[in-house]
Length: 81
Image 1 (cartoon, one colour):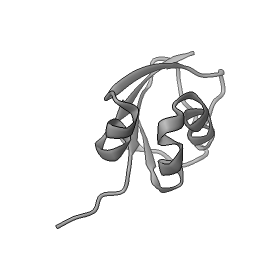
Image 2 (cartoon, helix red, strand yellow):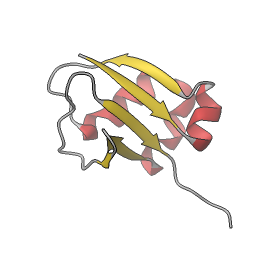
Image 3 (cartoon, one colour):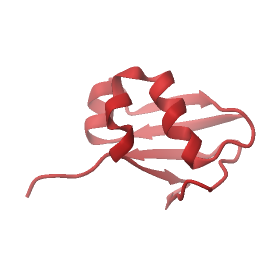
Image 4 (cartoon, helix red, strand yellow):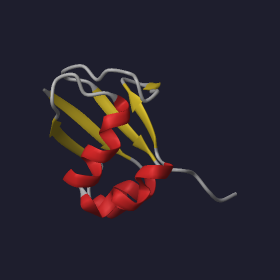
């Protein structure tokens, strides 16, 4: 299934793009996504443990299923003042 991945902040800088299209296996869950992304976009692998995942504008828990044509957001931790 095809999904759109949006990257923000440091993830966007490391990947060199704010938007990707990914093909995921049917039945993928948000918890599976971090391992998939680390493999597909190695430059952001070091951020995966600290990032939150959003699916279609909502924060996702690891058990949440990802549907075809979903918009996935990878949200790195925010720092600064």
